[in-house]
Image 1 (spheres, rainbow, N blue to C red):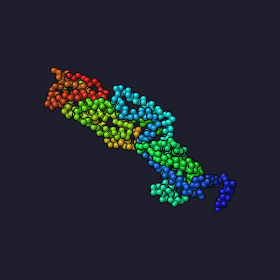
Image 2: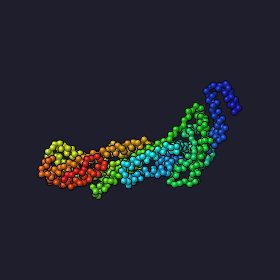
Image 3: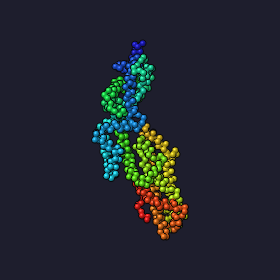
Image 4: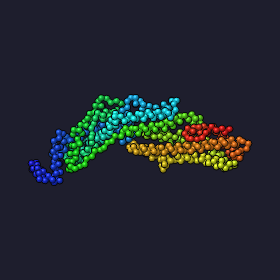
Length: 529
């Protein structure tokens, strides 16, 4: 039969070579012959041989430990986790002096330098920024570009190591599970047909694939970072052996040419369009963006915390042992969540706490009653002044509502929905686009907080000025501004509240002195005596 088939093919090649079917059959026969003479002996008599299964068992055995390292470091499903390990690898490219400079630019060290220095904070912040810019310029050097290329290669290596090789092995040995046995049992012969789709997926991943010593060193470094200890020689040798074996398989046995021939044979099609996956290097770009975002966020945080520290003694003096009121969501707990998971943070927590506490401690019902009674019952000699004072008291009465509205904005249907914010943070672990949305949302929230601080501070400053003027006016023999102010302030229903207002003027002044660190208001050292 073999002789007759050969004779038939010879006849067709001579007399029917222009026929598409004959041409295809001749090309397929050529592929079979080329596969049969391979030194690896993976194909014979139209079937894949046990050696083919052994190659995939070797791949399974050697890719598994490498996949375990990569999937827990730079190729996990958590983008932030990947970034942390990439950060560590990129940092190895800096010399010792530059690494020391990088360490000095970490948040706590930056803040400590500013707190302990006599130099103006803005000047120090500018010096720190120039230091960062100089360090980031080093990333354009050939050494860092090589690190970037290596990280890109590791992404391809991860995909190759994560491939499901055991599915092919089981086509030959159904009992092989890779757990209870490390060698093949009874191995059958398999047609290329069921294997072809799997091989095409593998082919897609292996374009220009090769492993160098750079990848070996990088994988060893990742395992060392993962476990927080130096690898011994045996561990390094084991990783090196795994990678050399993987490289050997794809450079000697499963070359692109061999894979293409097996796929064409299995699909009975010589005109298949083959494609390789594209791996682009962007680790350095991500590193630069991360460092710049973190630096900018830390800068705002440092400014805020330095201000908070500066006014902390005044806050204690103002409220004594009274704890600061805590806002819903816009507070230290949520901020810690943001700092741990993103480069962003809330920057106006303390001034909002001070405002809310001031309203609770000093703007009591008795005080507000007096102020509202002045608006309603006062005989103002100047209608413009009455309009201004009435507007101030109206704004005062709205402050609690403004704070509540801001807190309510974090509810389910609010514009600052807390659940949405936390959801975006969680989603940013698997999709970097969501991290940008987190940044935009946090910026909007901080802008709203700052606007609220500015509006409330101006209202309370205006109230301080106008009340001071009325107190002075009330002590004159004849009032110039509100003719019946003495009667109003001394009446039984207003007396207690009026006394509180006068006694608390120094507290109001201290409050405004604190808020001047966070908002733009007028001169507060006014003499109302």
